[in-house]
Amino acid sequence: MRTILHYLFLVRFRKLVSKDDNLAVFIIVLLYFGSAFLIYKNFEKFRSYVPLLFLEIVVYHLQRLDVELLKMKKNYKLILFIEYLIYSSPFYLVLLLKNEFIFIAAIILFKILLINAPKFNLKIIKYPFDTFNIYWHISFRKYKLIYILPILIAIIFMAVNSKNQNLLYAVFLGLSLITCIPSFERETTEEIKQNPFSAEKYLSCQFKNSIINTSYLVLPVALTLCFLLQWEKLIFLIFIFIVPLLNLLLKYIYFNNNYLQQIFFILFIASSIFLFGVPLLATPFIYKKATQNLNELKTC
Image (cartoon, rainbow, N blue to C red):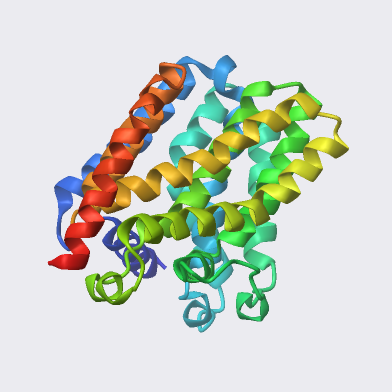
């Protein structure tokens, strides 16, 4: 079992860092423990967000393709349970030190149910997304993003029940990040060159595609808020539409460097939150730069 767990850890880290990059692995582990320490020091503020700390395991489990191979071992469920236990160990330690035994029991029970749940085949799902940007379909099939939507809706019920507005805002932020994932993917330069539209028209079609597809994800959230009589929160759903549009602009500004796109996306969103949207005033300049880069891609 120890050998299997060792290889499972290597496989997971290899998706995040390059092979044999022990320093990067150490930094990731350090970030986990550093995050756990900050949560421990500010536990009363973060208490309502504890369930979110374990969502990463849910997403990872739904994406993994090696479960069928692991089933060759009779104790494969125990192997998965121990693996997930180790991944979340810093946060379990925080809950243990805070005597949150009910939380621990609930999360462990949920993981047991997750491991024993039947595997769903998402290939039978026909997504309603507009196909101008085919990466909406590809991303949702590849990363199993559709599973996250019912989890976010469940968190909305938790937030309203506990009267925690910050948890609602976290749901809006999480949903907006999901809508950004397709625009982190890239079409080839040849596809851009062969497209008959001008740079402005091409970008306009990308915007239209993003708004239509985002609407499909926002609709169940909006209906949930209406059902819970949270009418005043509907205005914040506009934010979910704005974020992927911004990411599209950054995509074409940093078309040849995905990492720079991610870095500036994080900086822009963080600064917009803390500066009450002031950086959004730079959007016309960002749009102009994106269209210039698209023109260069079409003519190079």
